[in-house]
Length: 153
Image (cartoon, rainbow, N blue to C red; front, top):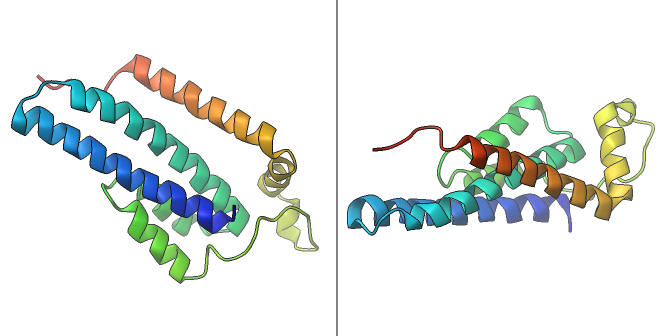
């Protein structure tokens, strides 16, 4: 899977879960079917949101995005349906082209700690994926325990 495919997959997943969450809110508040639609869609969206952020950071490091592009990519998860247009904008600029950077080159940026960490992750892919999933799950559980940011009603 290329950086482009990974980022696009998570951008699409983010849009799909936004759709589920908004549909759940419509069912809850406009139709009055109770809390269950948001109780189901909310955690799904929250988990995918966190996973999108992790995938975005990994791709940003690999592709050597500027801080502004990285911020736009990550912030797009906060605005409903924005992740896909932002992904397309990034792709049109050629910032998703290329493969994973698995080996160091003479480029001085390859000596940066994040670049070294990325190469380690790519060299230990299964372990890295497991560790990243565990990190997302831990953050997700902590946020579930903390509860919603605003109590409605």
